[in-house]
Image (cartoon, rainbow, N blue to C red; front, side, top):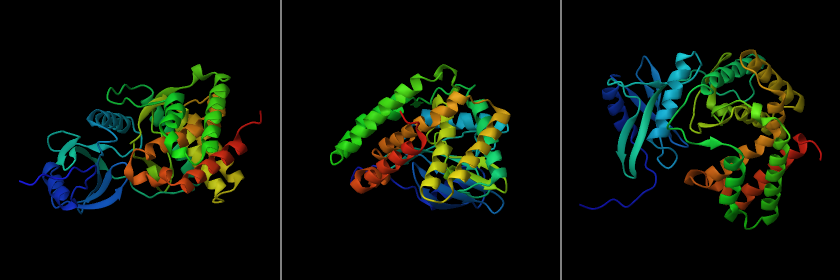
Length: 332
């Protein structure tokens, strides 16, 4: 028998998955269509009566324990009335499936479908809905323990480790690399002046960009918990703030609308759960951690290499971060 040449990433056949899901979940005549390749692979499952999402995880990103932690959290969120895409059990009660793929075991799970669509610039009612759901999510994620979720979000993992691990990409931009290191040091100094001991901690989504929630009218449904990890919960508010800053930078919304949108979101969040003024003051500083964390992640997964390996893309990213800091950090 001829041995398979080693590979790093396979794509499971939609037809084979359709047959597997029909049998394993008692969903007769289920169809399966490949939707998108990202951190993992996403497939649309339709039966004529119901619609689901099937996600196949990439082993280089998360193992069984982390996936089990995600499904445990999503079950708890669904039970608590948080509007999320939640895992669906198969006929044997299992939430996670295992497939022997060319590169080894890959895991998959079936999820409820998040009705609606991506709204890049939510209206006021939608912003209030989003603020409420993030707060309700945090109420649960701050009071649960997920043994399989080991990722942590702190200054080491979002600033200093990413800078150390991506140093080789800055061979043609030493000035940019030194600037980032200086900014990381300034962030630590700025946060040392705040009462971070009072910051709420729990499991963060860490990717609350519009691509990861759907609006059906004003109702929002949260999904894609691929980067689930433990840290300050204000990180999740920072992610959406960063989205508003990007829209402002690229003239998709005005500065006034960006500020109003975040004020509405925070107001709605505070109707469910408190967030301190010091936590909000930390947001512009924590934002650099968003960029550096994902910069490191992009360096470890081949479909994202061009976002960091191409010098022009890297310089564009650094230029945006400089403008973000100039607009939002107080002058020393």
